Length: 102
Image (tube, rainbow, N blue to C red):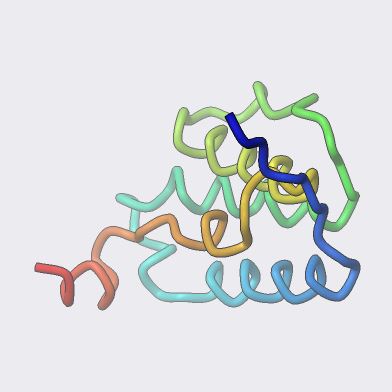
């Protein structure tokens, strides 16, 4: 089995991803109650990226499973185990992207 080399993101990539998460949190659909778990996860992700937290410590305090999963993706992103696209790709209910996929 070929193992992919883990390459953590650069400071610039982290800052860019952090800005994209903050932009995502400003989308109207994030405020819908159906997206509360996504919002929780992305808010925690902002803290994780800003604090450069590379362990899962504290993620268990989040209330929702989806929120915890998104926070885990943020840690995995910092450790080079997933891409920014994966972290940013969580769909929102009621967003234009969801409607276009139907």
